[in-house]
Length: 501
Length: 55
Image (tube, rainbow over all chains, first blue to last red; front, side, top):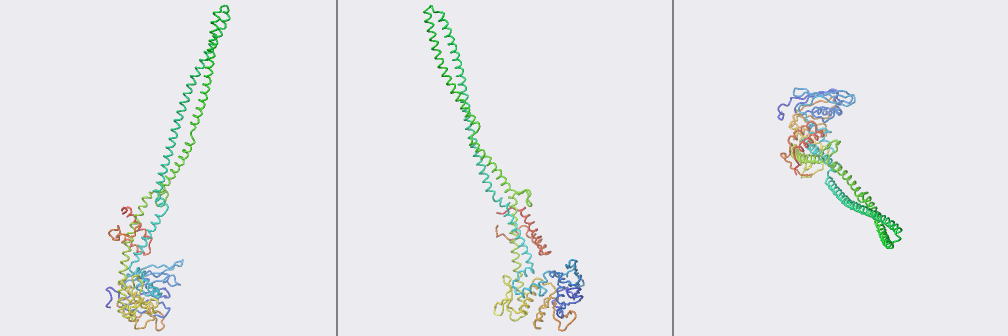
């Protein structure tokens, strides 16, 4: 065959055992067109699904094993080797698959090389959906970059949420807390200064009172001594007067002596009167001094007890000290994670915050890089895909279509003659099927050019023979093995392959 | 956070190494987003350790 790549095997043999509705079946495919002929409900789609499971994992094993069987098997003879996959139903009812896949296996092949009603592209077209971004993403591996973009974005959001958590919010309050602490310290210093001033002033007053008390005490002692002296003088004078009176009694004969004694007595009495007056004055003075001293002592006691103003200030000082302790604790909490924190125990918030910001910075750069890579990849994929679609429509010469392509939003555009756009949902069923097949073939040529198979299941049933064969020939020129299912014209027991080289 | 960054690969530390490792993970399992995030986090931590914030 002209289009056969070097190394393409002469045939592929497929054996199925307990797969879908088929108990046992063996089919041989050769390079060219292989038409599986079978009546309805005889296992055509089962063959396609079973064969697909040997090169793609898109079909769940439970959709492959026969419903009433515990074990099934698919065997493929390809390039002189045997590839076998075994399906087993577990006691819990799950179906597991174990074994080989074909050497050209590629998960993307199911979307680009198997035109089954359940494959994405056909379903999209027949379901009227026209956006092919995801389809091209998966085939061009653009989905790898979109996964990286999404993962980066999620991480950035997670870090953003972390920075909005209470620990970091408290940290942002730190400048305010420090200002508040400084204010409290200033308030404490002011109160301390006031207390000191008041105490100093009280000390001065106390010193002054004590000095006055001492002074008064000293005067009091002096006056007391003077009073004692006066009392003694008075006693002496009284004694003298008594002695003079006795002398007067004894000296009655001498008038001269009497007169002198009487004068002395009068003088003594005069001195006594004077002493008594002075004593009285001193006593009054002592009484006053005593009262003054008493008053000063009272003042001293009062001053020593302390003033209410100082007490009030000391209470305020205590309150401010407590507030300072609380504020310092608050600052410590804002500065550092608690020791029992699950993620950053005891670490400085400023360090963790800066670490997270650096991580976000790097993730943003990485996300930007992957966005650019994604855009480049997708733009190139769309361009190459559109080129292959255009070529297919041109070569197939399908009537009625001017152009079919994906626009910048990866939305399918169908242009009729005269460049008139036709909405996809208004296309006929066979037109939708034709476009599906052409798009799928373009996808295969663009993204899986070396894949040796192209399988078409039941999509050609409504085609007229001319269009059917034109399409088959076109595909055959591009793929070594074309496998097509078709309704049998006469009832047959088992599916059979008709080969057209 | 700035939305515009220099996207040239030479200016992004470890980008080639990361891209290679990430594509390997995705080839093994295209849905393993958690592993992808773990790897991105490891590289982000490495950047945060080795580079200062560019203001």
